[in-house]
Structures are given as structure tokens and as C-alpha cells.
Amino acid sequence: GAVVSQHPSRVICKSGTSVKIECRSLDFQATTMFWYRQFPKQSLMLMATSNEGSKATYEQGVEKDKFLINHASLTLSTLTVTSAHPEDSSFYICSATDRGAFHTGELFFGEGSRLTVL
Amino acid sequence: SQQGEEDPQALSIQEGENATMNCSYKTSINNLQWYRQNSGRGLVHLILIRSNEREKHSGRLRVTLDTSKKSSSLLITASRAADTASYFCYNYGQNFVFGPGTRLSVLP
Image 1 (cartoon, helix red, strand yellow):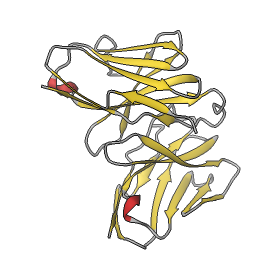
Image 2: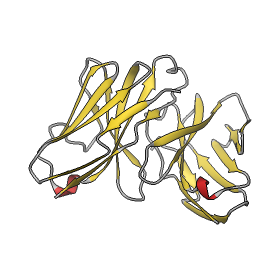
Image 3: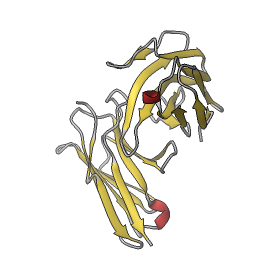
């Protein structure tokens, strides 16, 4: 099956620094990639949708200058949390759709990245 | 809201019992999918049921779909402790949004 690799799985950083999270589709070309944020015991909150080679579409309330998304190729998308603060601490998950499976809309998820900002 | 809504939000059962989770949605569907999320992990696709299907099986999973009621149910038979997880339904066409999920706890 399609595999999405996400790393780092855990990152701890100091307030004010920037953190980059990578999301790669290992064995398929990802038409579209998605970034979610999840708070403890809550559902996933869609942050943005990115298509290869174009600007990401952010959901309402998500600061695009705070959460920079780059989708430079069909297999790689990155999320950079700029000038991170403790309130940005969360679990971030990426997912992708496979061009071949696009007609089903099945989503393939990374394992998530837990960000802790001190 | 276009998201699916799972019910109940939390469910606790004994190992060996069956677990039933329900999902209601508001928009029309192409297909409906169920995902599982173990604590601290990403989501894993479990099963997909198309709009023209009424029931589907996969191992210990049974999914039903009632498009007239805009609802689906996921049945896990003979549950195991390893089934402890959160379960989400996802309506393909709802702009990639997920509902609150059902947190299932299977007690040994």
C-alpha cells in the first residue's frame, strides 16, 4: 500500500525558533497533500491543502505566515512553523492522495510529528 | 459543517464484545471511509464503502451505509485490546474534514 513518511516524529525547540516538518510519499505521486493539527483527545483540524507547484490553500483562522507550506515536488511537502511559541505545541499530521487512487479519495497519513515548544 | 459526526464519542467494552460506531453526514457522498487512529499515531484506512453499496465486510469489520438517512455504521466483532483506538468516518467530498471520532476502549 501507499506509504507516507513524516519526520521528525518528535521535536522540542525553544520559543522563537523555527521548525520544519517533512512529509514524503514513498511509493506514489501525491497529487495533493494535507496538513492537520491535533490537540489531545480531539479530532484533526485541517490547516491547509497543498498541490505540487502551487501555493497552499489555508483554512480559515490558520496564519499562512506562521505555518509555511511548501510542496516542491509530487513526493514532498514541508510545513515550517516559524517563530514557534508554546501555544504552537501540538501534534501535526500530514496526509496525501495518490494520483492512481484519486478516484476513491483515500487518504494516506504520515505517523505525525509531536512539536513541543519550550 | 460538511464533516461527518461519529456517535458515540466514547465507547468502552470488554474484550470479545462487539463494538458499534455510527456516523452521520450532511452532504451527498461518492464514498464513505472509516479510519483508525492509535494514540499518538497517524490515521490508518480501514474500509471504504461506495454510495451504491449497502454493506461491506473486511475481516472483523462490517460497514453499512444508508444513504436515505445519510448514515453509516462500523461494527467490530469479537473486539480485542488492540482495537483500542479512535475511529473516524470520512465522507469523500467533504473537503478533507474529519469529525470528532469515537474513542473506543477495549478492556482485557
